[in-house]
Amino acid sequence: MLRLSAASKRFHDDGPWVLKDIELAIPEHSFFCLLGPSGCGKSTILNMIAGFEAANSGTVAHRDRPIIAPGPDRFVIFQEAGAALFSWLDVRQNIEFGMKAQGRRRAERDPVVDRYLSMVGLADHVGKFPDELSGGMKQRLQLARALALEPQVLLMDEPFGALDAITRRRLQRAVRDIWRETGSTVIFVTHDIEEAIFLGTHIAVMTAGPEATIKSQMPCRVSEPRDPSNPEFGSLYKSIEELMREEMGDE
Amino acid sequence: MRTAAIRATSLLLLLALWETAGRFWLDPLLLPPPSDVATRFRELSGTGELWTHVAASLGRVIVGYAVGSAIGIVLGCVIGAVPVMRDFFSLPIRFFRSVNPLALVPLMILWFGVGELSKVILIAYLVAIVVLYNTALGIETIPADRVRAGRCFGLKGIGLFVRVIVPAAAPGILTGLRLGVGFAVLVVIGAEMIGASEGVGYFILLGRQYVAIDDIFVGLLSLGAMGVLLNQVFLLVRDRLLRRYVRTTLYGS
Ligand SMILES: Nc1ncnc2c1ncn2[C@@H]1O[C@H](COP(=O)(O)OP(=O)(O)OP(=O)(O)O)[C@@H](O)[C@H]1O
Ligand SMILES: [Mg+2]
Image (tube, rainbow over all chains, first blue to last red; front, top):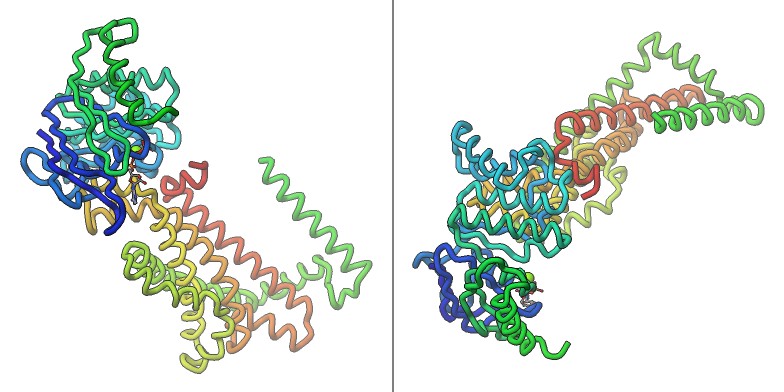
């Protein structure tokens, strides 16, 4: 369980509270989608879970241990893969990086690298550098290098926001398959209700900031196929859309 | 191939223009045509006189550059990575960047004598300033998510610094090192003109005293050649050994 209790955050001592008394309980192995209007504090929540930012009050804990720093049990897939990948390492070396930093030996590393290379479909591109990859391939690489550490929690901040619709759909499928296969917990921030319903086992909607909180939290148990042709999909979509509309005003 | 052709054409045109100007329009005593300069060059290099001077300058440049880059990289890393140091050094750096190093030559000679030391220190000083400035800038401009990714891998402190920050700042460091090559060649001449008994700068000054204009031209050409050569060596090393670190600057990001 990953838990935020009464977690509040502001960036300046007498600035406005960005987040106020956030209560979130994210079960192990869930695919937890976080929706909310722009600027409400979704990335801030993710950064607190990652350990990049500390809450001013309240607690953020993973398996009952307070989160005080980043660590390889929680790995972030950043939105801008180009900035987050290591440009001086090729595909293979990027994936290998974490294990090398942990001092694991080559014989131990190679099978893991190969496994995740093929899991994300980059096996034919091992020698390429990040600048030689397309946007979708860069995101796959980010995913693979995170997976190679077998983190318990994957934190994804609108990872497919910058991709075209087809690539995006393909990567959503890939992420869902990987999540099923690895059994990790995924916390997935998105703007896109459809994406949340397609991927999630749980969906939380936030209120608009400042002093943003969790407005509503629901399980997402839509049967397959999870697409608009399915009436269950449609009705969940409508109710979430309604929640979002209340927060966004009439724009 | 095309670039090479254009560069060769530019060189030939320049030489042709110079030859015509020196031979037909201007007093060859003031602007000796390239053919005369080439003759003088052969004489001077035949006796070995030119090489003594070139070797002296080159030696100073190399030693000063090596010392200056080492100091510059270390200081630049400290300044770029430690916020307190950045604030502490920002004013002094701006101050020293605006003091022309040639203005320091008299001081250097008073402090360190007319020997090798004052010249090497002057070169090292200038190179260190350029390198540390670009190193610090290179570190400051690393995308925040790249460092955060490193921290996700469990790295911190020295490990994070060595495995992520330094390689990520390499484009900035290498820009500083490349600029440093040019500056070293620029400043060595100034130092040699004020107090030296050998070196290309001294040789050019001698040319002025004896009104040996073709000697001056031979000196100038050796200087330019030295700069181009050192720059080529730098690029060769960078592109052979360090290419992976400058991919984003070479190919756009
Ligand atoms: N480092 C910071 N310093 C000051 N204010 C910040 C900082 N980071 C975020 N904020 C503020 O906190 C609020 C929430 O920001 P955050 O990036 O978490 O929103 P978000 O929900 O991720 O938005 P988006 O959907 O547009 O990505 C915003 O008002 C933002 O201006
Ligand atoms: Mg955000």
